[in-house]
Amino acid sequence: MTNSVRFAPPNSIIFISGSEDAELPPSDERWEGGFASTPSCIIVTCYPAPDGKTEITLEQSPASTTKTRPAFAGYLDTPTHRVIVWTFEWTKVLELKVPTNRSRVRIWTNHPNQPNEVRIAVG
Amino acid sequence: MTYSDFSVLSGRRPTAGSLRRRPSSSGHHYDPNQPRVPAGHSDGGQWTSTGGAAPSRQDDEGVVSDATSDNEWKPGVQYAIRRAGGRGGSTPPTPGQLARLALADARERAAVRAVRERDPRWQPQPNFHETVEGRIAALQATAQEAEAYLAELVRNGIGPGPFARESIPARGSEREFTPAEREEINRIGYKYGCHTCGTKNPGTQSGNFIPDHQSPNAVNRIAGGQQRLYPHCAACSWRQARWLGRWVKGKR
Image 1 (spheres, one colour):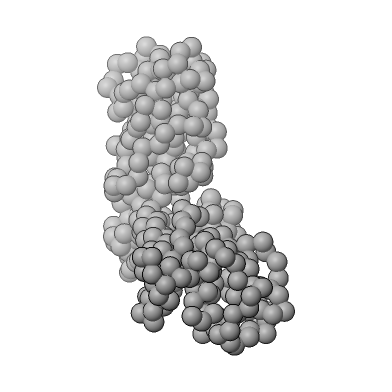
Image 2 (tube, rainbow over the protein chains, first blue to last red; image 1 turned 180 degrees about the vertical axis):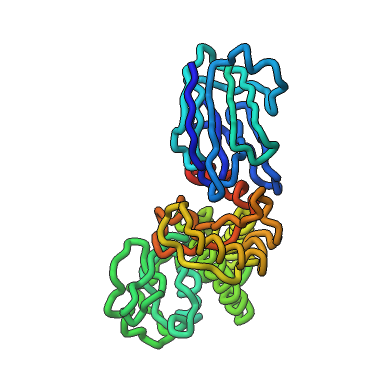
């Protein structure tokens, strides 16, 4: 199952979590973008929104994506059995059902911190 | 002992007009949510009772006298006044204490106002006191709390930053910008830098600065008012979003 959207995320950033109660990584230090995470939330920076859109894909982990090294790999708490992609204002963008309370997440991007393609594979 | 001491201890702001005003029935604990007399009233801007009632006619007239009124003293308040000058003594507040109180009060008001301009829903931690020294300490604690939070807001791009010089009016909360708007934001950004951190490198692949709404849209839904656009670098834009992500959830 795959779903995808092409849009300009506000402030060029998306949150990935299992629920709205996720614990965001702290923002105390200056950060040059890319990825930041806690056990319950992953942050991914995208292409600068005023300059263009980013294609974001959320899918069950397919065999084809395992051939290249992901830019991010980790585990995410998914107590609601969902992986959800949000804007920073917590508007839901994409959603995928998962069978477990904790899910393996791998992310491929076409740029280290300003990608216009973000592919999120779960499982 | 003068009524000004009562005024100070009761939480009323020690302005020139209020220092010699007769006591009201308000409590002597500091309450940051204590309402103020509406503009247009002779006491406009003064703190009033927490019950929100309009000031009494007696308050309006502002009797200038050091004579006590048997009916208006509350035992607890009088006790607090007698303790005000020191530990266990009956010394009234000294001129020095009143001066320090006025300074602490001014600092606290300025800090809280600056924070609320950026985060209208911010509330300081409540604190309590029974003496002049306690009230000074409470005001200083609130000022410190507000100043620390203000620094956090500034760091995270909430409100125009320390490098903000010029800006352009926003047409609304939308994030679709015209070529003219982008050109003007780039001009300001390359001249003065990112309004939050001051860098003249926008950090974007295109070399364009990012037009940043101030107040940020999420805050402006509460604060209201006309927004303006300032140049932001990519790093400050991301940082702002991370901070607002928590703020929107009430976790900040």
